[in-house]
Length: 192
Image (cartoon, rainbow, N blue to C red):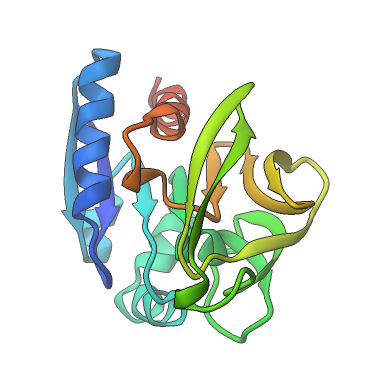
């Protein structure tokens, strides 16, 4: 059975767990969704979701636990939101462990600190979407082959590369499942 893991090293991941389950039900896909912490748990997953939180802490814990190496070596599809976008990048404006799976250069807290959090309409996948930006990063640039999915004020806020997707905003804090649907389809392509 296809397994999607929600990386549970730091921060609250319950919203990702719930929306992933709802999305699978909506799509009629049978899959297991669970919180994962260890390298061995991650190794059993067909896809990993890295949620928001503190990217430096998550990155250090991923390195210490061996999770970072397992994701890279097994080429596991990853969806990264907010801090997850930073962790998927090849380069950040802050020295920290990164997966380097998407050729983007990211500015952490690009839209400001916690009190500067906001919601704004963006266009993604041909339609409007309510982006929830909390201490959000953005990509300064995207490398060759990276698909820029959405921008806000000329700042890159969503990208896809191969079977990975990264967003600066929090899709788990909305009722709109289109981002999770995209990721689940990518995971299923890799499982087939």
